[in-house]
Image (cartoon, rainbow, N blue to C red; front, side, top):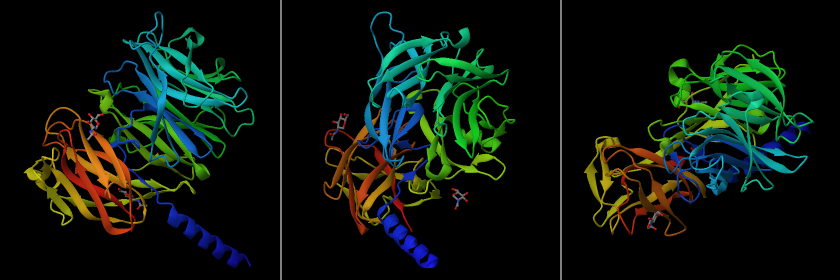
Length: 462
Ligand SMILES: *[C@@H]1O[C@H](CO)[C@@H](O)[C@H](O)[C@H]1NC(C)=O
Ligand SMILES: *[C@@H]1O[C@H](CO)[C@@H](O)[C@H](O)[C@H]1NC(C)=O
């Protein structure tokens, strides 16, 4: 009986899994486009899960620089395909406003207060020279906002910079905690929030002189973990974690989360995202200190060892099974100008490109010139992740229309500047394909030049 039951479960799972084609995460380098084709701008982000939907809040740095414009909100059910939702918090230019576009708003984190059915956003509020060093609070009755600014606090009359807030969902009281850096990042404070999450109730612990920032909290097997970064400005460093049976401590010593020489695979912790079955994603920012709008996202699955140890390991492409919470490596098939599938239309032409694979790209796409790949293989009739490697021959962003299967899906994709025609960048989009070598992906631009195209990589399920 038991065996029959197991067989039945396996059959049902196989059927279910056939229909769920998990998309790919490409950590670190590639831009991640939202569902409308625009690179996601949500740096220093925080995540909130409501039902099956994850909301991602983060800093919109589109306009460049470090000053405040918006906290963006995106949503997704698979953590890969993100739809832009709103400007959850916007700069307020009213006189006396603390959150104008001359302010700094960093590391926004939203928690949900069940008692008051209120969404509460905490963030690091600062002046343009980082001299103010306070915490800002905003609230909304809806997840997407607009959030109403409530004011700022200096916790225990001290400065505060990088911070996070986190709710212990396993706790019946749904206690919320605040972790922040103080004394110019020398000390780390762990505090408990009031039951309405709008103020600080109690300081639980102060870790003197550890000089850390960029905290992310999670809980696994009744242990609390805090991941954190060294304080090295926008430059990446070797991030660490510590764990404890209680947020008040005592905490373990701190251990590295990634191989030391990798500087956390060139990233800084911003959040640990919970997945089903006690699995987690390390979500890091790969900051570009010369152009914060160009910062990327470095996410990897967290491996949990048998001695409460955690670690992350490099993989260039992985997918998440949202039923089980497990991650697996993924691969792609590449198509470039030399592929038999490539069809150059009009003025589109193969050009030398030193930074490209095989040393060339396809240029003059646009104003009649087109690059089409005909006969592209889809593993299933489902959405596939497509990575586009490109070069912009000028120092601005470019656009291209990606048309899949004669208009079955079409987007105007934004390609941030690459650094010239010999330098490639990548952007990932998620497009519906049909099963088999039957798909047509056409790149064009009716009003200007698209980027030069190095190659396309189409997610492949072997
Ligand atoms: C996943 O890929 C990485 C390299 O990209 C490799 O080191 C690792 O062993 C792979 N993991 C599995 C389970 O195949
Ligand atoms: C794509 O979007 C950009 C920016 O909004 C716009 O300038 C351009 O005209 C659009 N291209 C097409 C073909 O719609």
